[in-house]
Length: 227
Image 1: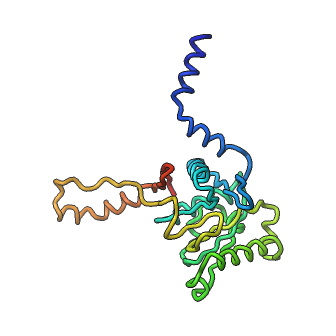
Image 2 (image 1 turned 45 degrees about the vertical axis):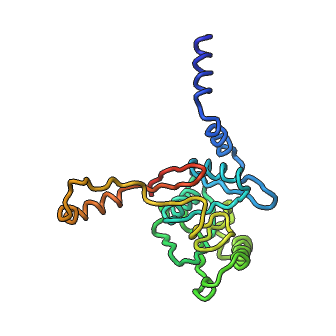
Image 3 (image 1 turned 120 degrees about the vertical axis):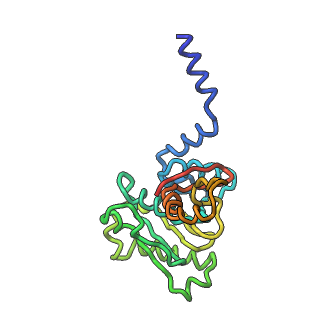
């Protein structure tokens, strides 16, 4: 018994306390962590939720903000949220006009609960925080009161994803964000490979790049993911 207790104690001592705390916070069934009237939302991607918890403790900023090649992670988050067992509904405010619903990996039935608005160019080209907040308020009104969203009333509304906006939204993807997404490292050519050979193998190289996952990096840690 003493031997078993010693082994358990050693395992606890070797565990990273920060990781344990982050895992516990991410596992709390509450949908949000409150901060005044703002809150940080759970994405149900454990690695991301743990980073978001660390970031929030440091900055008290409740927005999950993503920069770089953000769309693959945005698609993964949305697909996860609207699919079982979470089955949320959410609103996408797409200032960039680049959101492609065919990239989502959810079923057609779940896709019906992803609402997308693409403001006209003259409206989206001069955006600011207050304008974005006004559009988010309109989105909330739409989700609660408009007949076109009635099919999603039985689902919990997760919140708003803003693409190309500034400073507002539960999840924001733009040129600036605390989480930066790029392709994970792809091994380069050997120094022995001649230029002509590298040119001939360029299609294989592109296949290797396309098959590589993505890396999300921040000052609070990093994780990799597949589309």
